Amino acid sequence: MTPEEWNDGNARCLAMLMSGHGIVDRGARGEARIDDDFLLLFNAHHDAGPVHATQAKNRSWRLLLDTATEALPPTLPEACAAPMPDWTDAIYPLQSRSFVLLSRTGTAP
Image (cartoon, rainbow, N blue to C red):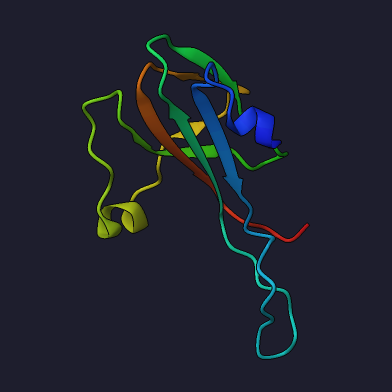
């Protein structure tokens, strides 16, 4: 974002992608390390708004947390034992004044 965009008083939503392909460390045999991708969505506005979550072939987003719902995030044993729900739509309905955390499994490019 530009400094002007950061200082825009009307900007109320922010999305941040943390790519699992951005790890610079290498494995013991020099192989690339790949982790899951995480998409963080913040909405400080009083209105809901759709967010376009880019989709990759055979890599659906998993909803880990949405503060607009009553659901609690999974504990580590729960997250490891049961598959999380997939979000396959290209648009996520980000509710007002909420935070959403999505993840998708990292794979080799």
